[in-house]
Length: 194
Image (cartoon, rainbow, N blue to C red; front, side):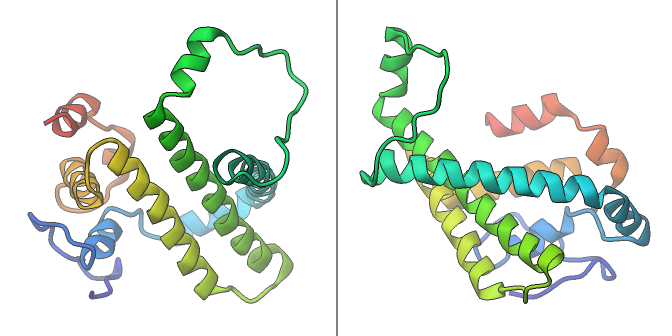
């Protein structure tokens, strides 16, 4: 896999996406980090910190729930609430594929929380950035994505290919702010439904 930067033109879109070239193709559609963006990051740092912590706390709660539901660990972390599960909801939420999609989506959220916590510890606590752990967490997120793809009767390769095809439609040459803000939702949906 080659490494690309925004200083070069990046890789050309290819008709066939592989695990080896996906990251390079994804970077082509990433917003370049500019001085203007860095200034916006600095201005938004208080809310970034607050929302990162909220997401980490939510992810930790979801992790306890995930371990209880899917792995049989501990007691259900029941919180007070007025929601009463109706028969139609109980029927839908216990469909085998829905349970599996819940596992995949809750798992993705918990992995996101772990990634955010590693970044939080580095940025706000001055801890060394643990790239080994981050790489592992991205792999874990891929595992949950793979489960979701399987339930949808698709492969991870198809998911990656379709994602790049959609981004190529959105950004034919490279990322632009205009294309990011003014997406052609109808064309993208038509591509996704093919």
